Image 1 (cartoon, one colour):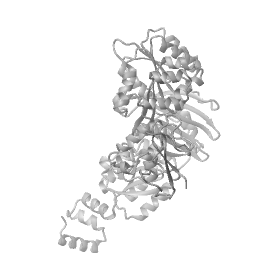
Image 2: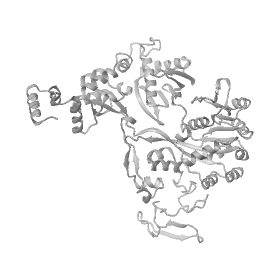
Image 3: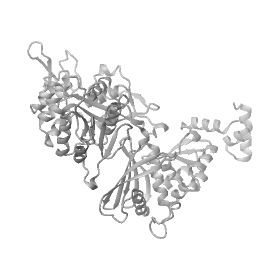
Length: 612
């Protein structure tokens, strides 16, 4: 601890030499550099960072040249939405902040670190090899006007840019990497937890070289720039593990765009009980898998986790007594004990053609990656009706709509009714980071959108996203599924055969215990796993009027008093401001609307309707 006498001695020394007080205290062994940095951070209400334990972001390092980092004793450690987090030993050095902001066109967010930690981080982050040269390439365009793909493999900046982009994507857990040309440059974006974010902004002259480099790695024709091409790259991580990348090129008006899908086999196949299924939904899905024949569908938009769910189901089904064969495009998870095949458009090896061949392989369980056309659907239905358990996917918004989609591609309802065992609809929500989530009280409109009453909300702790180093300041870390599991009961089967509407199917499934996507999402909000904003971003629970039946989930117009599908009363809500009303109220206290109360036949539900 620094005594009053020690402080007076340090101040006298400062008066003689003009050195900073903190540096004098360290030099006189009155305090450690770490203690001075922590005290300064506390005084300025800034975060203190131990850089030895903090990963350095390659994308952030690209923003500040090594010479500026050395001059100002600072280092960039993260970047998010044009906000650059910079560790500084002296956060009061405003000239350094202005210099960095001018150099990067980013707003600087200061954190405090010791000068020694910053020096070590600069040595780690700016080696005299790959990254140092990549940092410098944005400043000066080569004499030839563009990056040449004929540069030596170990020295070409293009090679280093591509390697850096891929290493960064693997480190951040990105599912896709987008290399997009613009009028003035090249933007590299990553899709992490379902959302795209910009990670690199490169000069225009590197574009052709970067595209050519990726094409060479994927075995594509570098001379063909007009037609789309598809390829595959197998690369290795820093630890020597193999990673596959699916490559797609597309000509745009400003040049070729490349998208790389990361197929990370290291992750392995998660078990069904880790996907986020409720105990009831998990029991239903496990019941589906016990069938010896029939069809199980997993439905949802692209990127909703359907392949992961199917792979988990196959992992649960595999045994030495079961022959499982898959047809995929592409194979994303390699599952021991499962015979996996892949379609190939170049030789006309389609899902339907592959499925016919697979059925001659004595399979017990068949996975068809996606039902895209009538031919594939017809053969899959026949397989499901002739002693095989068939698993597949469809692109529909919810479980009941899948029956309508099958009819659209030419499958008769009575065939669907006979073959279907169960349908699982799903979405992926970003999971709150447990290290920085913050409790809060949602506004009344948010609670109404979640169909949560004020009394119920009083007993729930809601959380919103914060931001910390663990989640790269996003507030979210990983994703969790929400599910709508629809069992094909006898009642549902009869409705399908009778060409019932989607609303009627949903009402029947709800009666049998189905929980909708929105309801499952609300349950995960209540559990503190995600936020109302994230649920609203991913799931649109209603259309048009913005109302749905709280019982069956069916769409309701503003003037509806009861649900036309299930007859459930919408009582308890003001139809002018749509806030929750309590029994006995004759006027809505929120909008002053008069509430007319009438009853149906004895025993029926009370109806509340705004007439003012």
